[in-house]
Length: 361
Image (cartoon, rainbow, N blue to C red):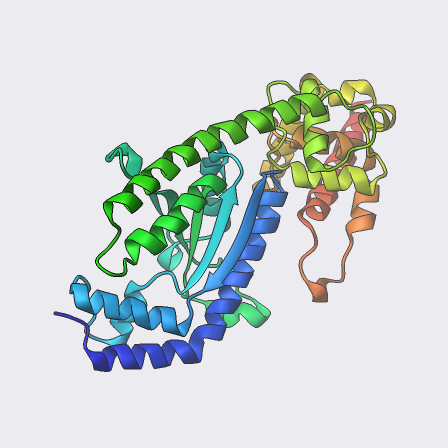
C-alpha cells in the first residue's frame, strides 16, 4: 500500500520542526568520529556531516509512494523506517582503513536500545561486475555518557555513518544522482558505459593511493628532524616498533610527546633512554600496568602493546606527574582528557611499585 499524501504531508511537517535536532546529532557524531577515530588513530580521512533537507525528504517519500516498496501507514512508521535524517561520512584515503574505522565506530557508539551497532557492508562489485558501489553503513546512537547537557534530547535518535574510500565516494555520489535518482527514464547505455569506466578508474585509483601513501611513509622514515605532523611521528618511530601498528592510538602519544617538548626521536631518546623505545621494555611495562588496572577495576584504560601506546607508556614512566599537572581541567567544563586519567593511574601504579620495593628491602 503506497504512503498516503496525508502521511507524507504530516511527516514532512514534523521533520521541518525537528530538523535542528538532527543537525545537532550529526555534528556531534561527526566530532566524535573526527577526534576519536581519525585523529587519535592517525587515519588519513575526511569527515563530513549533513542532514536531509526538507525538500529532499519529501522527494524521498514521494518516490517510495510511486514505487510502492515502503509500507508506512503512519508518521511514526516513517520516522522509525528512515535512518538517514542525520548522516556522517568518513571518506578514507585508503580502502584498507575502512574496516579499522568501522571497528572504532562499534566501540564509540551503541546500537538501538543499547545493543551492538548495526553494520551493513555493501560491495556490489562482489556480485555484479558492472556495479561499483562500495560503502559500509553503520546505524548508531550516542552512548549514555555522551547524552549530557545540550545533548540530552538526542536520546533514542539515530545517525547513519557511511564509511568508504574517497575514490569510492566519487563513484557512489555520481551514480546516486544519475542512477539511483533517475530522470527521464533512467540512465542510457552511454551513461551506463561511462559509469562502468569510472568505476574501474576508482578501483585503480584506490590501489594507486595506497601505494603512494606507502612510498610517502617510507620516505618519512628517513627524516631525523622535528615531527612535521602525526603521520611523520608514526613514520619516524615505526622502525623502533616494527611489529606494531603505531597509527593506532597515535593521537594520544603524539600530543603528549609534543606537550612535553619531545618533538623528535633524538629528544625522546635523550629524555626517556633508548631502551624505553624498544618492544621488550614497552611490552613489559604495559603488561604490568594493565595487570594493575585490572586489580583496581579500571580496565577501560588498558594500553595496547602493539600500538602507539608503546610510546605512551615510555612517556608515562618518566613524566606521569607532569602529564597529570598539564592536563588537569575544570570538571565543570567537561571530562578531562583520557591521558589525564591514564597518567593519574600510572602514578599510583609507580607509587605501589616503590612501596613494594621498600617493603621487600
